Length: 212
Image (tube, rainbow, N blue to C red; front, top):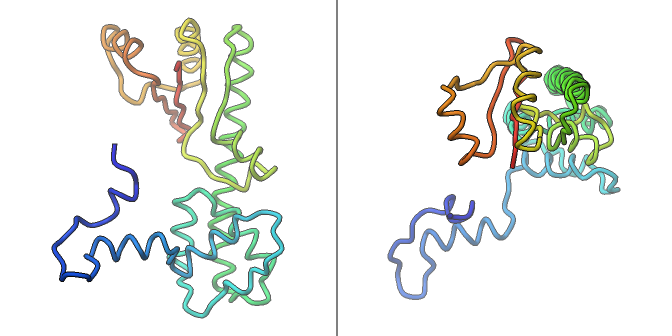
């Protein structure tokens, strides 16, 4: 499959002899590390424990709505918000307020999903279904030591194929329903050829149940 770079770069075009094509020029820009001011600040804010001063990245051309949106899409808005709050003397109050509200909302969502994960693990344990959580809260804790500093869209659980039926019953008892309801025959096919099934609950919590 094509790499991200191959998909992102425009198709090659004819060029004057000795001059780079449009695709080659784009490749040079990407590989040369040219990023927007918002990207640079997000990247710097995610470098936990480094001593480089953040204010160096707080340039006048920063677009705060764009920065907030990009950080949210990357799941690091709470982390970026925490970093900016540490330097509120050089950030406008308007930007601080907007990012603080957005990051606090993302942090609340992360903590709610973590509580749902702990509930799921407890119930899986009660019915003797060994369950391995990965990504989501697990990654946030390992990477940042704080569950509220990274947002995530769903909860990923890995169980043995022999435990899928019991795991589905646990999910059903806690109010989760398949995102894509299917017949018994289609579920059997999914078990043989697929790797996971998606579930969701009325409160917005989503789970991906993996068996390989």
